[in-house]
Length: 148
Image (cartoon, rainbow, N blue to C red; front, top):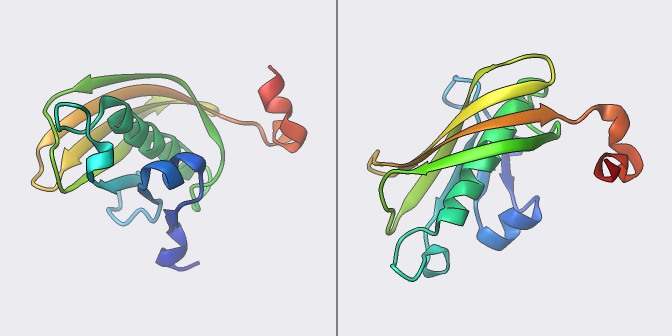
């Protein structure tokens, strides 16, 4: 599998809607996923800064994919967000922002993952702490996971 196969474009509805890219190549060698977005006017709130919901989406996606990478090198094993808390540190106005995830604890099926969202210049925009659970493979067929 090439590195290009591990850069995911427009695979999910949120990716297509928002326009972010997910990198599960482990290019930094830290075991974490990266999510980046080149900010445009459509990503900004009425104050001209990155909307908090979009910032949280990037953190959630990078964190969930980081969990996935812990069991699947392609980063596509499904993980569900159980909880996610976001702390907003500084505004982002323009340029590229990048979210990263790092596993901080957990066990076989539930992971604790910390996220960071940074601007191109290294400014910390937001952080997150989340609990993510692996979806058992026997619950993937026929949508049975959605019935609980």
